[in-house]
Every structure is written in C-alpha cells, then in structure tokens.
Length: 368
Image (cartoon, rainbow, N blue to C red; front, side, top):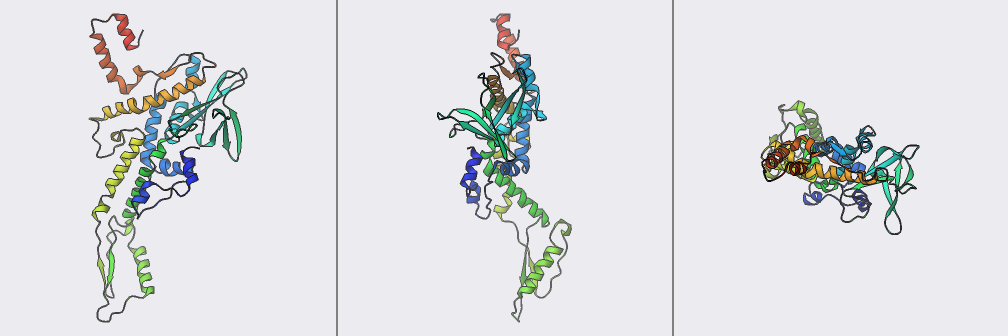
C-alpha cells in the first residue's frame, strides 16, 4: 500500500496545518485522484514544478549502447514521451511501471507506461514481486514480472520509501500540508476580492431612547440587501444608505491577517523545495539562494533533473538487458545546454594541464 492508500485507510487524518490554525480545517483527500485534483490540477506551483522537472528530464539528450535501445526509449507512450511520463509519475506518485510489449518474434516492440495508481504489486511468500495487478474500469489483469524465458515483462521504477518494501514515496505527499495552506490562501484572497478587496465592516444599531432592538425579520432583510447590493467587485465603492439608527463601522485587517500573503509565499517555497525546484525559477519572492537565474537552472539540473533521469534510464536499461546484453542508457552531459559553462571550464583546465598526454586529456573529457 502506498502513501495515498495509507491516508485513505486512516480516514480521519488531517494535514498538520489544520490542527495548528483552528479556524481553518480541511479533511485529507481520500485517494490519489483527489490528491491530484487538489494538489496538481488546482495548484499552479505544483503543476509548474512537476512540468519543469518532467519536461527537462524528457528533453535530456540520451546516449545508448544500442541504436534499437535508443529508439525504444525515444518512442512515445500514450501520446507522451516515455521518460517525461515516468518522471511525472515518480514526482507525484513515487512509482512508475513500464510494460515491455513484444512483437510476434518475441523482441521488444514498445515500452508502455502504466498509470501507477492502478497497479498493485503481488509478492510471493518471501516478499519478492512476482506479478503486477492492473485494475481499470472495474476489471483487472495480472501482468507477470517476467516472461517465460526469464526476461523482464514489467519494469518498476520507484522513489525511496524507507518504510515500504514494494512502493515508493512521491513528492506530492511530502508537500500535502504546504499545498493545503497555499490553496486556502488562494481561496481567501479570492473571497477578499469578491468583497471589494477590503474587510467587511459592521452595522451598529443605535435604538436611541426607545431601546427597541431590531427584529429577526429586519436583520434578515438587512443581510439580504447587503449581499445583493454591496457584495462583489461590481459593487465596489457603492455608497450605503442607512436609516433607523444604523451606523457603519469599518473593520481593519489584523496583523495576523495581513501576514496571510506571506504565508502563501512561504507555502509556495515549501512546495518548490519538496519537488526539488529552486524557487527563483518559479518567480517566487523572497528567494536569494542563487546569484542569478542561470545558476538556479544549473542547480535544478545537477540536483534534480540528472539524478531523476539516471534512475529512470538505469531501470529501463536493466529491464531490457535480456534482449540487449550490457544495455546502458544515460544522459549525454556534453549536449545539456544548462551545463555548457561547466564543460567549457573543464576543457580549459584540462587543456592547460601540460603534464597530461593528448589521450589522457581526451579520456578525462570523455571524447575519442
């Protein structure tokens, strides 16, 4: 059972922030699909972070030990690049499954990425995965882990989960509390704009000498008239006409409420950190970790994109060694635009080393 399945089993579990801020409480999503709707489809920071990393991994220049192996990896899976799809699945779910489809002669014809939330690992008595159950549309099919000849049938790529033997942990779960806070802040800002971008005030009734309070019908009528005639951006600045001893008293934002925008930015930075994206690349204020955009982009590739690409390509290469002995896949660092400055600096240093032979210099640079 993965992280999302465990959350569904717990049922009443809530994000940590819902216990800290008593006025705001949001129940935890009950499924991975609900997590995606709230955390990915409805949150621009998560969506941009995932797309930034996944598209970079998918566009990384791949070098392969065999031309047929390179063609398999370069083909699309379900209309999307295989490597990009797996990168997105690992970031969000923590697991990626690649089914190796063979042709009539038994040779691999296509690599198809399965949706990870539909896959269940079936293990033997010793705990080793022997099959994968794929469920969709109320029905399911069991896919063996290996073909009859002992060749891999399904490649399982997973992120580290120290408490689970069969499933990985995605970044979406680690960022759940920050995502909930960011979404709540967005809704709060939208509600503020709907009320003329200012806090609501209070109608104070002064009965005067008669001392007669407003009746329940009068209070309800006042509430309806205010909602219809003065709420919303179209009614911003519209004057109030008060009668019957009513006075308007404006209410100002408290310092805690005014700090709500900073809470949103802080939550956005936490989300970016969970997905391994420098906040500067997302245009978030208050981030001065990197000197410039180019340095932040280089850090993204070195710390996030290249390790994720190595995990995906290494798993695929290992799964295909039954057909391609000694299969190897990797990223050609010489063709990564974000690392051009690093390569040029290395070339200058190696070229200036007079004590190295020409062959030794080529070996250090990975050429020839």
